[in-house]
Image 1 (cartoon, rainbow, N blue to C red):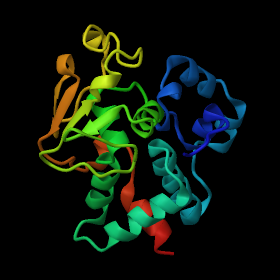
Image 2: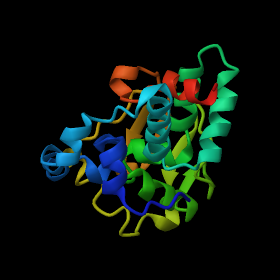
Image 3: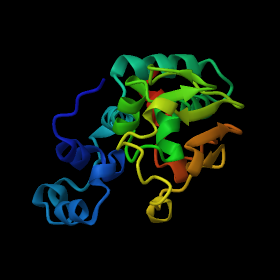
Amino acid sequence: MLLIKSKFKIAKRLGAGIFEKTQSQKFALSEARSPAKKSRGGRGGGGDYGRQLLEKQRVRFTYGISERQLSNYAETAFAEADPSASLYRALEMRADGAVYRVGFASTRRAARQMTSHGHITINGKRITTPSYRVRKGDVIAVREGSRQSPLFSGLAENKAENSRAVPQWLNVDINLLKAEVIGEPTYNAVEVGLDYPTVFEFYSR
């Protein structure tokens, strides 16, 4: 598991969007008042290498994975017709990513812990590997023995308060604590907010 010592420090360098905790008005105000932020003129990174490195780090910290994991994902995706779309699918369709997207967990980190602790099943089989790749037709659910856990209490009742939209490639029944993978995520740089082509530039150096 990727250990993060200071989310606020990392987010100041890479951008608020990489952690749920830093996507707040408090963090935005802190950034706006930062003299260092104004003097350096944003996250330029200093040339192509710096720009590529920053974007690679943004992807890595967004998904909470190690450098080796991201490198392996990128190497596999680079062999595909559309590397960016392939890399995005691989990262989004990790079991922990899917658990986060369906709304069983409020953060990716919490989703990773839920998965590794065996609270989640895929097609009725308990899994403990956050990197497990879900596929179209798979059914993701909270394990029967975990449904009374405080982790999942109130999910259905709080659904209306959860502003995070479920992506179209997932069909969720929050009352049954179950979701089905009905498609695959589609990469759009503007919507996603991560520049995957720049990541490949970094690994192609």
